[in-house]
Image 1 (cartoon, rainbow, N blue to C red):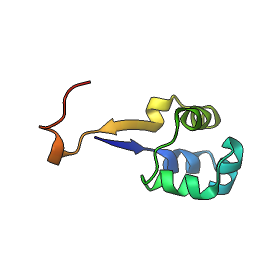
Image 2 (cartoon, rainbow, N blue to C red; image 1 turned 90 degrees about the vertical axis):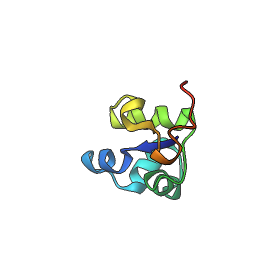
Image 3 (cartoon, rainbow, N blue to C red; image 1 turned 120 degrees about the vertical axis):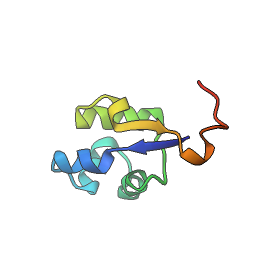
Length: 77
């Protein structure tokens, strides 16, 4: 399973730069870039701060997606 997100879309919708969003939640701009590209999964604390700043539930920003290549090998949670 992979964690997917709508961070870039939501950030743009709110008119926030990567730098502004990073400052609002206390992380670096590079962290925002990595999350938007799917290379970094945030801690629960960072995810909750993003949800607060963006006015969205965490699960509407981040979700688990099963890739077709490993779908059969995954167990239900």
